[in-house]
Length: 158
Image 1: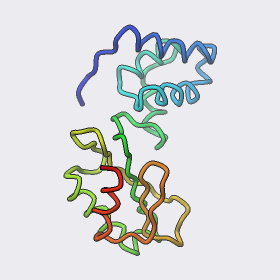
Image 2 (image 1 turned 120 degrees about the vertical axis):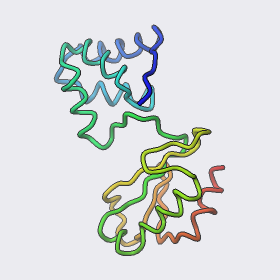
Image 3 (image 1 turned 45 degrees about the vertical axis):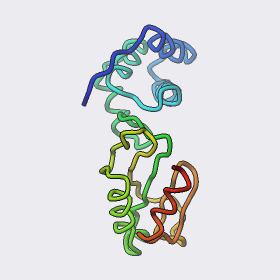
Image 4 (image 1 turned 90 degrees about the horizontal axis):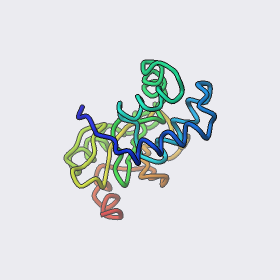
């Protein structure tokens, strides 16, 4: 994974978010939510600043970031795509929809297109099992998807 160099301005933003929660280690999840909301993701360099400001080991911050699926250590695209691979979606062809997305976008799961427009991930359930298979682009849910519908779905965002 490539390292990034944080500018002083970005470091100050992280420090301000930490301070808004009293620099308390018990607020680490709230701090991480705030920081990810600001930067879009939580690379190692950001985690190091958070750990320092909250007076806790970087390994503990990393453990939290890697445990909770909401947090990401890689940038998301402008239009993050999540394909549900829960049981209902899986048995109704979600894997074929996922394959069509990978072909169309020319990226793998966990990657972002070179132009930063799309990122692709999977999740376990979006609670729309009756619409299986389901994918989400941002907050918009697309149900009863087939691989043939993928190009039209992506065209809405291109």
